[in-house]
Length: 93
Image 1 (tube, rainbow, N blue to C red):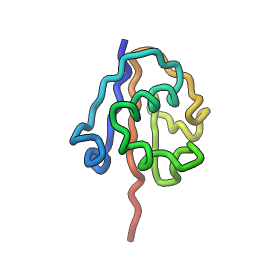
Image 2 (cartoon, rainbow, N blue to C red; image 1 turned 90 degrees about the horizontal axis):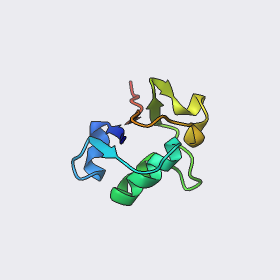
Image 3 (cartoon, one colour; image 1 turned 90 degrees about the vertical axis):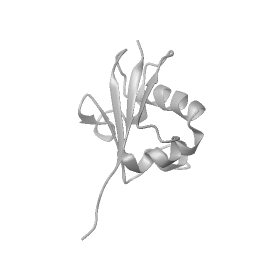
């Protein structure tokens, strides 16, 4: 069963205009899904992860409505057919 990745509108510039991608393949963690995402959309990687392969400070990745940073980060175990949402934090004054 594919895992669906939803991207914020800000990121579609780096995904060929796509904001929803169904990724089927063997993946058991958020990191596995992202590796598959980078294979098809390599320009997204540097917008989501740091050079140390950590989630960027102003990027949020949610799984089952919970912030991956507050779970087990990229090692968060996911269920087949789940949904992952990636978006940039908005700030300003």
